[in-house]
Image (cartoon, rainbow, N blue to C red; front, side):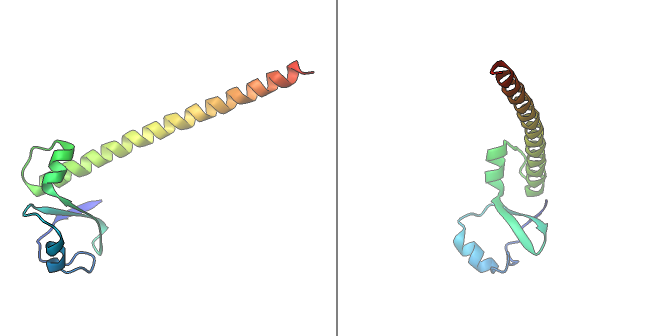
Amino acid sequence: MKYKVWDKKSDINGVSANNVLANINTKDDIVLFYENENQILRVEEKQLLKSIYNIEDEEASIVAEKYLSALEEEKKKLLKEQVTLEKLNKHIKKQDEIIDHLLTESLK
C-alpha cells in the first residue's frame, strides 16, 4: 500500500475536493492510502492515526509511514497465527483419526 498527503484540492475517487471537504470536519492533514492512484482505499486523518497507533511525530508523511509499518507488523503477526492454527487443526485432525481408529478397534 502507498500513501500521499492530500492537498485538499484534488478529487478523491471522482468526488470533488469541495464535496469531500464539505463532509469532513477537520483542519488536520488527511492521508490517502492506495494501491493504484486511481482508487483511494482509505482516507485517514493524521491525528486519528497518531492516537490509534501511539505515534508521536507531527509530520503527516512520517505518521503515514509508521502507520503502514504497523499494518505490516499486524499482517505478519496474523499470518504467523494462521500458520499456528493450521498446524493445530492438522494435529487435532490426526488425533481424531487416532481416536476413531481406537474406537473402531475396541468395538471389534
